[in-house]
Image (cartoon, rainbow, N blue to C red):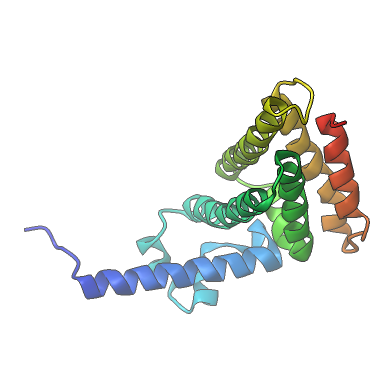
Length: 198
């Protein structure tokens, strides 16, 4: 007969997994992916390294789960910001401004998510993350075109260009330790120009 976990055991394991993810996020924000070994995360979480394998098959599995967890929060934040905007063009600006502001508040973490060399599995997740941002922006562009606020354009291409440019523009401020006060307004201005608004 196969062993079935009791509700109490499952709750304990779920709680431990959450603690491990919190520890991993903290390490990622401090040290990047290089500092997120299974042993380092286990130590930060206060568990044995072997216990990590109850939750993650490998370091790559941990890295992907960590990336999805943190990026999921970013997608939620920018989606909420876009939803609060009264106008779809303002919604696009809100996505860019919110994402950049959050990145600049946690530069080491943002650099790890955007540009730090990482395993192939993380690189693949970065593409998923970029597409989610692209699709969010493209939906607002389509709305703005339909309402006459923006000229006709292929929304997906414009949105992809904005996502790529914003990520590239942030790498410098995230790595030099001195984010410029001008970064946010410059990115918003660039975005509005890229949209071709009148």
